[in-house]
Length: 256
Ligand code: 13P
Image (cartoon, rainbow, N blue to C red; front, top):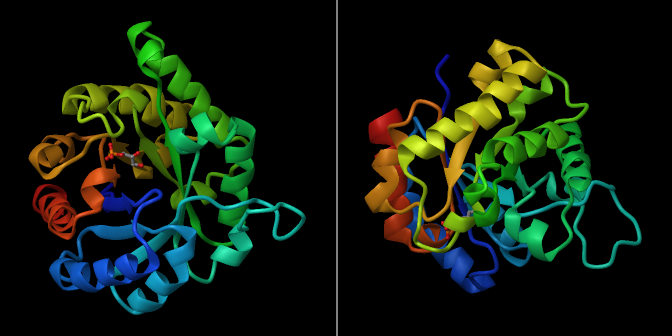
């Protein structure tokens, strides 16, 4: 089954409101034509509604970088998935930076995934191992456990809206990426095969899985040429219009 590639730019804590507006105005004409690729930007919460308004009716979609599972409540600083739903198609959850610095647990990732799906939106669930785990040979078992925990209680029907991003922590922002073949093998063993065991091969074949970690125009072709990699979750290289447009162009050429 053909999976539509998905390239998402995770801006993290970058770009002011004005810079965010300016960025999407410049990006849009450059990526208008690559309809075979899903194109997504994830601004900060501050810029999210402005970016969503600027992109309404365009082929560029919007993701939030997090979302609370409760619809509302006494959760100072949080923004709920229900509040985000009118503005976004995707919500990134479980990012390793949130897991490391902001107490994101597997249980909360699962709660968030369910809330996002209940709102008719799609979670991008980020998973990935640390350098120590990688060097100890624990990558597949650790990532498999993250996937199992994140998907607990999610139906096969809802899996059609789930995207998983494999982001080895040691490759994020370090300039040191996994090789395409290594990333593909881990994605297959730890994610696609796990989903096949949890559900069935149909669900597993349809699941879109991104690679993330120092993706840039120079290595994009290598990642996009892998059979189990359906796109990229991009940090640094998504912050420059020309680089992000180049990533989309390469994805369209290789996978589209
Ligand atoms: P970099 O592309 O900057 O390594 O970041 C990857 C990432 O964390 C995307 O979510």
